[in-house]
Image: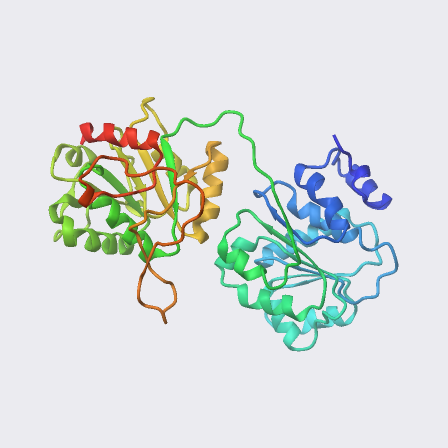
Length: 432
């Protein structure tokens, strides 16, 4: 296995990692350090705790083999103050070159102290995007000689709405090397970084799980927004031949009310809440009561009020929302009785894919990504384009499956499931 001495690091850094007991580079360091040192733009996708921060701290320090100029050569953007402090701590542990000046910028009352620190000389700046932008606009952050821009935890920063200051800072820097670190990659991140990345290579580090958990089969539907989620749920739940009994999980009462009102327009008495806190809607006191009522097909469960419930015998477990606690999700989809007659369907927007990744890391299984149905109406996110659009984008690759149950041609549906999944769903009709 490659050692740190084979990764083009200077001798001072090799001594530092040895003193800290880092005997062997982690996978992310083995796969990216030499590329970074070679000047390539890189997108690194890896879970938390896999050595991403140590990787770019080593790569940054490796650039300074000479007397620093006191002008920022490296700008590192992280989501919050706590992240700035954590990165500064990494530098403190690994840096033996006391001539290098490292300054942290984060939101705190007043900007004078941080501006003074920059004025005294800064070779490396670690900052939150909003504070870096604010100080840049005050002409106190000089980016004219910046050679390396690092964006760490890109998905988290995008969730916080930081794409504008990130983009503005990136555009304010001339030609330089870019490193992007994220635990998950999706279209919103791609859109944010595309204007300034230069033919990047993508390195993905997949966690290994020796003993995968025994879960029900999990299918993932990546949808653009809440409204499209609602359309997808309606499309599925209206099909009474296949979706005979389904439990739909949402995170709060506000979402539950929107889902209930949408389904109730057509399903009426077939949809109800588990233990509703109001009396003007259909409800069930227990999961057994829902199972016993033949006309009841959809049970809404609100996570914030959830008790431990027995989900055995329910053909479909639908996560309209992903719970913030991954253990809650895993407890629902764990296969306790050894059968495989239950399918767990998860609806996730791009911003929820990081939760999906954490679940996959814990279970040791990847969710199977399913194509969106042909007949799904996809709602455009732009307010200026209020008209919904039909799903029409098709690849040249074969579909993963046609309709998963036999119906009249005039009423045929295509939910893009595989033949194995279709067979399971046909079996589920017998258990409605």
